[in-house]
Length: 81
Image 1: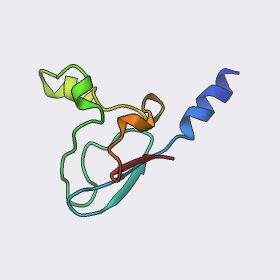
Image 2 (image 1 turned 30 degrees about the vertical axis):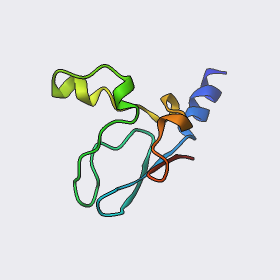
Image 3 (image 1 turned 90 degrees about the vertical axis):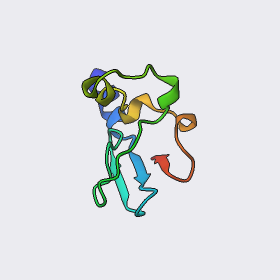
C-alpha cells in the first residue's frame, strides 16, 4: 500500500508560467527560478509560512506538489495537474 501512495503523489504535477518571459515549466517541486530568464520566484503560500532568516531556510519554504492545494496557487500562473 505504501508503494501505491508514493506513486500517486508523483502523479501530481506543478505547471508554472513565468510572469516575466512566459516560459512554461513543470515539475514535482516548486520552481525557484525560471529556466529561461532566471527570474527568481517566491514560494507559493509564502505569507502563510514562517519567514526564513537565511538562504537554506528560504529554500525549505518551497513545497513539493503533494503538499500544495489549488487554493495555494496563484490563478493564471500555476496549476496542479
